[in-house]
Length: 265
Image (cartoon, rainbow, N blue to C red; front, side, top):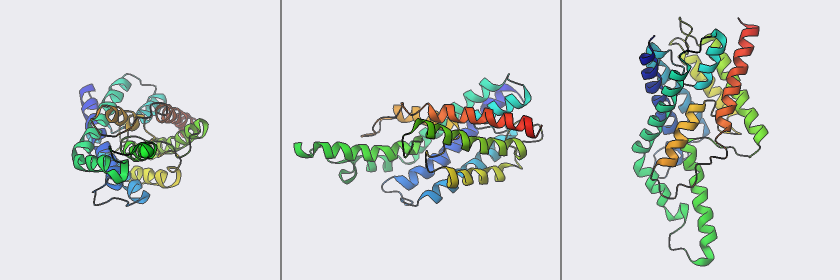
């Protein structure tokens, strides 16, 4: 496959992944959404179906890596690094496009949520209530950031990093052992459904501590978009945590490739 096919396929596939995955987070989180408060099951299955749709769409062009950790693992497994930058570039760009499309789709809901006085506090709050109003805005901003990127329930660097590494090892081992297409270049069409169910399983079993990024592009691209978008009362983009869902999955992908080479190759 050509470099242009890889870049286009990864851009389109990752955009679909984030549009549908971020979309289910927005649907469950935001005020005036018909799916608000649908819960963690909806999020886990929504992300799984997002993976399936993205893989089916992009596999004919690029092999549907859709994840820098998968690309890294395949490069380690095969010893072929020449297209890694092309894959990574398409993945990050696609993730940013997908996040922007989530904002467009839920534009009214974002505005309603982040300007609701019951949620963020009123702009005319009395002096004695300023601190509570600021706390309310922060409480509203956290879940909205969660539409775009992940964050831990308990901030513990070692645990958070380990959680992302472990979840990514499970995902990438599944990709390497059964989700490769005939050319050995990524998530193949026949492996799409199984891989989607693996993502659901990871979300249900391992997603509680950090929100299971398990994909550097999935977290970094939308976090950049969150920082750039003109969302009122959106709060910060939590850049202090942002390295964990990038480094953790890359380490997990490398470990998975090592396990594969030792146990399966």
